[in-house]
Image (tube, rainbow, N blue to C red; front, side):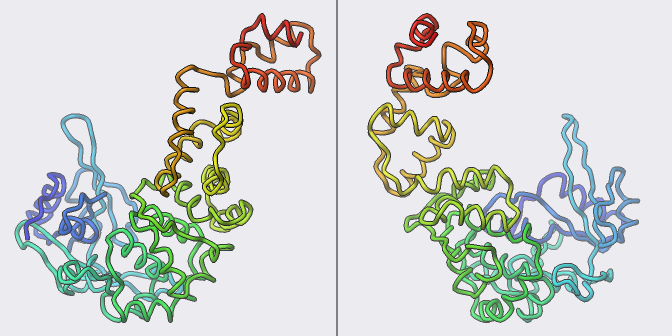
Length: 396
C-alpha cells in the first residue's frame, strides 16, 4: 500500500524524523486514502513531546497542548498556508464525563497510541519509510466493509459515548455494516448518549443524513438510541429512494425530507432541542410541509407560493421533489418562464416603493403596507400593471 502524502505532511514527518523522532500520518486521512477518497484534513502523530514539536518547527500554535496536540503552520511560496495538528503518542486516562479523558499519559509507543482509537479503520498510520502500520486489521475491515471497535467495544463506548453515533455515521458515509459485537455494545451502551452535549449529537446526525445513505438514520432507532437523540426524533422518516451526498451546509434539505410527514412544530422542536441554528430550523419548517403537497400549475398561485418561500427555498423544493421521484416538469417550466420575463413576485419588484407612497401623500403606517400588498397581488395577476403610472392611477 502506497499513499501519496501531501508535500506539507511529508515535510513534517521528515523534519521530525531528522530530529530523531518517529512520525506518521494517522487516522481518518489514512483510512480515506486507502479507500481512494480525498481526505478532508491530515493529522500527524509522533513520538516527540509537545515542547519538542514546538522546538522542531518555526511556526506553531498551542491548540491542545495539554493533550499533546500542537498545530504546525506550513507557509508556502504563493502566500497560502496549511495548518496541521501534530499530536504526541498518548494513552488516555479515565473518561469520567463519558466524552473526554481526565488526563493523558504520553508514550513512546505508536501501538499504544493506536490502541486508544475508536474503530480499526481509524487506527492505521502511514509514512513513506515504514509504509502502512495496521496493528488491528483496519485494512481487513476496510476490505470486509465493516465498522469494528478497537479492542472491547463496550469499553470504547464507555470512554466516549459519541463513538456510538459515529459508528452509524461512518456506516452511512462509507456504506459499511456495523460488526455484530460492536452493534451489540451500541444497544447496551446507548443510554450513555444522555451524557453527550446536544451540539455534538446534532453534528453527528447531520453528517449522517447528509451522506449518500441517509436511510441509515433508521439504524439509530434500531440500535436503541431514539430516547437519547432529541424531542420528536421518533417520527423521522428517510426517503424510500437513494439521495446523493450533499454538503452539511445544506442540511435543512435532508431534515426537510426526514420531517416531511410530521408537523412543522415537531421538526422545529427537534432541531431546537439539538440547539440547531435558526437558518436550518427555518429552512426545514419551510420545505418539509411542501414536499408532499401538490404544487399548483396556476401561474398566480405559484407566484404566491414563491413569494412566501423565497426563490432559493422554492428552487430547493423543486430539486428535492425531483430527487424524491415527483414530476414537477410543468411547474418548473412555469417558474423558468416567470423568471425569464422578470414577472413581479416580491414587494421589492414593485414599480412603486413605500417611500413613493409617502411622498404622494399616503400617511406613514399600516395604510402604506396595505397598499403595497394590494399592488403586489394585482401585479402578480397581471404583470403589465407593474408600472409607476399605472399603479398611481389605480391606487393613488
